[in-house]
Length: 464
Ligand code: PMP
Image (cartoon, rainbow, N blue to C red; front, top):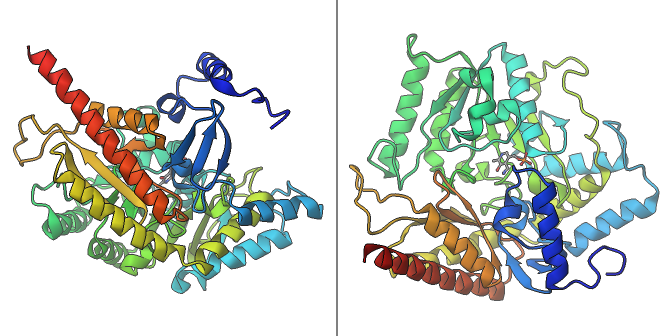
C-alpha cells in the first residue's frame, strides 16, 4: 500500500501511530483505548493491523457493517458514483442517487408506515437522527416531555443523551434531562421488579400505563416514547415482542407518538430486516442509521406524514446529502434482501447462542447468554460473590475487560456493553461464514477460560 502512510508496516510503525494518537487525541476516545490496533486493510470480517496481525471483527463498526468491511457490492456502488461525475456534495437537493435510495429504503419498511411516510435526511450520525426525531414529535405535539427507558442508548448529542440511561454520561445534559421520564425496560436476568420472565415485562407495561394516567404521577406530558427493540449498548437485551406490542397499545391509546430507534438493530441484524417486524408493531417514527449507509455515514428518520408539522428549514444541516453513502447503502439494502441475510443472521445467531449457553454450563462466571440474530451478549458475573436480595450475582466488569483483552490476543475483536460494562457483545457482519462462526466461538471460549483462570489465580493469591 504505497503512499498510505503505513508502508514499511511492522510493529514499530504501529506503536508510533498508537503513541501519537494517545498524545494528541482527546481523553474521550473510546474503542481506541480498548483495541490498540492500527487497521490498514480489511475485507469481510477480517481486519489486518499495521503490525501484520489479522483479526476477526465482531464489532463491525459498532454494528454498522452488515456486509463486513469493503464488500464488493458496496465498493462497486461507491466507484460507480465516483466514475459518473455526480456531485458528492449536494446539501439536501434531489439527485437520482437519493431518489433511488429513498425508494429502496421505503420498500424495506413496514408498508403501514412507508406508504404514507415522510423521510428526513439528517446530519450523518445516529445521534443526529435521534435528535431530529425528538424535535419532530415535540413540534408536532406541542409537548416537551419524553418517555425513555432504563439502559437505553440513543447517542451523545444533548437531547439524545438526555434520553440515554447512562447516568454518568448524562451528567452534562442540563435541563434536557428534566423532561425525560425514565421507565423500566424489561431485563429478565436482572429484573427491576424481581420477578423476571413475562411477569417482569407485564409489570413494566402496567407501571408505564398507570404512571401516564396518574394526574399526580409527575410525568411531563410526553411528546413521544423512544425505545430500542433490542437494547444494544445497554447490554444486548431483546424486548419481549408482547411487551413492545403493549408499548404500542399504551402510546396509541394516549396519542403519544412511538419512536423506535433502529440505529443498531436495523438491516437484518436481529434476524428480521427491521427489529419491529418480530412484534409486528408499526411505529410512528423510525430512526435509522449505521448499516443503511453501507459503511459510510448516513442517518434518516422515517415518520407518519401527519407528524410533519415542520416549517421549511426547521431542521437543517450541511451534510445531509452523502451521495456515496446513499449508493453504498442502497447496494447494501438490496444485497441483504436478495441474499436473505436476515434469515441467515437468525440461523447463525441461534447456533451461536446454543453453543455459548453450553459454555455457560462449564463457567459459573457466565451469568447469562442472550441475543437476537447477530446481536449477542454474554453477561459475566462474579460467581464467588454473594447474591443480592433477588438472587442475582454482581456484574464482573474487570473479568469482562480481561475477556476482551484475551480475545484480542487470540485475534478476535469484541466490545463490552451493559449496565456495568460486563457484557461481552458480538455484532459480526451478517455475511459471517460457518467457518468464521466456529473460529469466533473457539477464540471466545478460549478467551473466557483464560480470563476466568487469571481472575481465579489473582483471587487465590490475594486471599493468601
Ligand atoms: N441509537 C442507538 C440504538 C445506537 O446504538 C447508537 C450508537 N451505538 C446511536 C443511537 C447513536 O449513533 P451514533 O453513534 O452514530 O451517533
